[in-house]
Amino acid sequence: MKLLHHFLVIEGNIGAGKTSLCNRLSEQFDTRLVLEQFADNPFLADFYAEPARHAFTVELFFMSERYKQLQDLLLERELFQTQVVADYFFIKTLLFAGRTLEGDEFRLFKRFFKILNKSFPTPDLLVYIHRPVDALLKNIQKRGRNYEKDLSGEYLENIQSAYFDYFKSEPDFPILIIDVQDKNYLENEPIYNQLIEYINKSYKNGVHRVAL
Image (cartoon, rainbow, N blue to C red; front, side):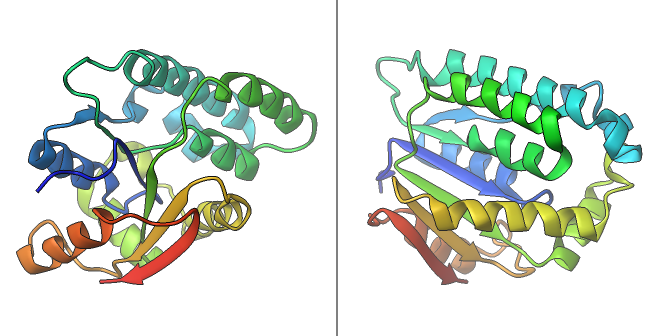
């Protein structure tokens, strides 16, 4: 089986399991792999502890790092390995900032974002892995990252709302929302195969939703 999409993006809330899925997909289909380097953000721990104080610096750092990484990996694809699987889309930069920044800071941030975003291609398919907030919190606690210990359910709800608001307004490419609940699709082969069947299909532009 070959991967149908040349540029596949797996998105989801914090703790959804998107990076683990991208690793397996890239290995299975022999694609380029783009993973966000979020742990390198020196402002992240301070932001989770005091969001209002550190929001602008953390979001600006994320935007610059994502732009540099995507510019290097997406705009200069290797000749014989053109398919790409990524665990984030650049629009994530604006969605998160829209929930943490206000007023003049967000307006300034949005101006920078629009300038940088013009150079990137849209995905052939964006897959959003959807889990309820309690399942996200359980996964976050299980992986035990110190800088995530102060994450609240309210913050995750806000991020989830930002994604769904964006999906309602984005008609330019297909978006597939997969409700996985609390299922561990990486350790259950039948469920994983069902997930692959959903992902490796052609969809019309707009939002589609399925459940495992």
